[in-house]
Length: 387
Image (cartoon, rainbow, N blue to C red; front, side, top):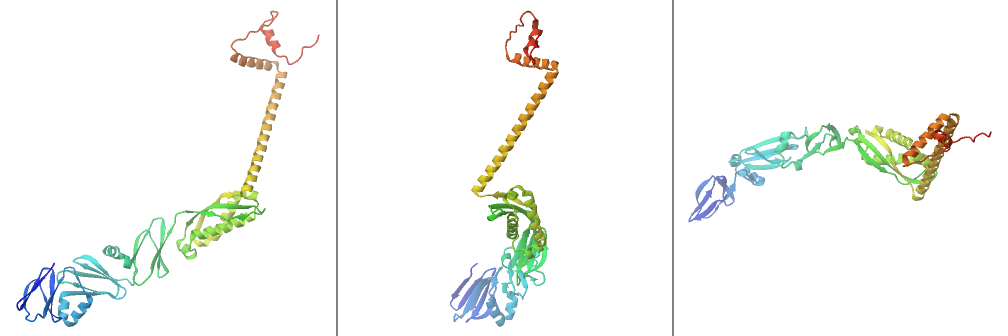
């Protein structure tokens, strides 16, 4: 909105529109405030000046208000609403029912009230640092300067610290706190089981063989308050602890013991680590050796030994099978020798298999003795007795 200010002969013409006010001064001193309308003012020496200002939801400079209040306290009370905050006090200023400004401690703001309804809600933040849900929605646009906000998930634990002192454990959800005059911190800890991969440095076994061992540990936080108070970094602390444990375990074993007794090694590591994390609020659910890395030449020797053991075992099994087959054949031969009927059945079985594979067979018994003589003379286990 604009205004019109002109001189005509000895008169000063000023036009003030709706939503405006004009501060009329003579030689720099306030005379009065002009309301909306057209004003003709006698000013032969051109000493008058009209400053037209927008008054709808508008702010007036605080320093000018102080001067105006000292000169004309009646006008200051009639035209303006001055808001001043104290120590540990927050003020939410609403213009015509809509929150517009957030005032921090020791601030002064002045608003025109001739065309706007001014509402002020003062909040004492010295007793309770929490921001209510209603206030949080009112200061949405300004919260970053005076409000700290944190969201605690269902699988997390939120610890509220005020000036470095643990105040309470927060439930899952959205939380906001006033940061005016205090330090607010929310530490969030994940309560779900976490996997920590541990890669050990090169170490020596009892028989002076260098190797590297990688491990996997699963841990979860069971007491967040104790964990924060005793351990600055859970994963880094657990990583170092497992490294010390595996070094001590490997140094007391030979290479064969490390490779063959993995279950015993895992159990020893778990007992070592659990005994040292018991007072930290952390639980190690699983801990085990994932891989054993040997130097190239040692790995080749181990592979050769394993291969030789497998070949020897295969040879032993083959010899055992051959012995069992020979023993079975010997037993069968003895049965046939003692039982001629069993021998004849075996002969017929062999003849049947032979006939299945041959299209035609011609048999000649000779001397007209028939098929019985032919079958009898096919296999003779004993030589005929001499007459």
